[in-house]
Image 1 (cartoon, helix red, strand yellow):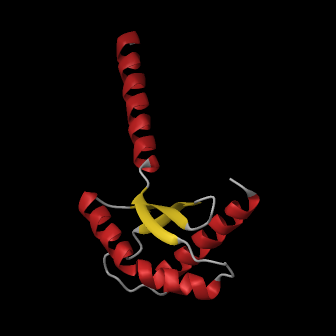
Image 2 (cartoon, rainbow, N blue to C red; image 1 turned 30 degrees about the vertical axis):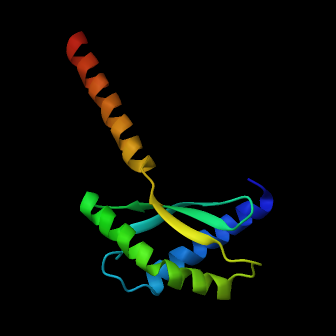
Length: 120
């Protein structure tokens, strides 16, 4: 990632996080959504926003629907607040890295427990 892309990524992450906390009133979002990572394209025309949703699959689906509904508002506000030639198109997706990490930890713990039982 170039230095410019990294700067834009940080700006987008900060501003979107702030708007979700302070401005978006959608009950599907609440405080269950955090921005895990922002991945702008090299031409800065698109940005993939990876979000973590705390809760079950239904909460995740609802949160993504709420984010999708807020995309136009978020993009307009970003255009006004950030000094970019063009405001990127926003695409929200679930970031599964925390769940995957939890799964790996569970597997490691079960292997350790099994080894403890066998060695006794």
